[in-house]
Amino acid sequence: MKIIRPHPDRIELAEMEPFLVSLLQQLPEKLQSDEPQVKARLFPNPYHDNEELACDWREHVTPSLAEHFQSASEIVFKDLQTIRLEKAGHYTLSIPHEHLSAWIHTLNQTRITLNAIHDFSEDEMELRKLPGEATRCMDLYLINFYGAILSALVSIAQGESAES
Amino acid sequence: MTGMIDTPLVLENETDTEELLATPWNVIVHNDPVNMMHYVTMILMRIFGFPQQKAERHMMEVHKLGKSVVWTGEREKAELYVQQLHEVLLQATLEKGS
Image (tube, rainbow over all chains, first blue to last red; front, side, top):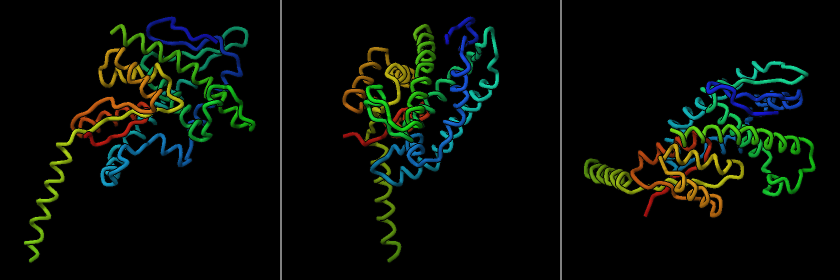
């Protein structure tokens, strides 16, 4: 798999094998979670010592955060439907440049969600120790796979910040 | 009797509100095991307009010490910054400054 920028208007995840495509296509499923620890991480309380202000925050800010997260993920899920088969069984996904922030956000949100569910140890996150249970192991793999793509996309965004 | 009790209570609340608004508030970014270091640096540059070196200094403080006070000032603006930090999934809280 290659992450390239063939044109300033788009970024491409190119030469993807079917297995990697299947990992990308798990994004919508992995992003969904009603676990309380996930909600607590995505919508944290900024006031630990003032319940009245915390209540105001939950009422006024949390809904707009939820909307923001949803609009980013909808962009990504639509892009995922455009993955196309190229030569020799390899696939390509074109990400329009204006979707870059949505992709960075959704990949990051998915990684955070998976970590909130499993509460991986530092040793596991650093891959010094692999989890014994299969689902934990697979989700840790996904955190790292999404992390590799995220890292490349952040570098692109960072390069643009430095230029402007 | 009611009026005599009500008046000081209202004044007390007003004083509380004034104190709340006048007190400087700290915006604190907390460490988390998932957010990448260069992502945190980029976010701090974008939201606070920090030069890269300053953003990296705060990022390293978060990474090594677990948290960093990234901004201090009036509550409304501090809340806006925390909201922006939460939008990009950084863990941030508000605390009254000293």
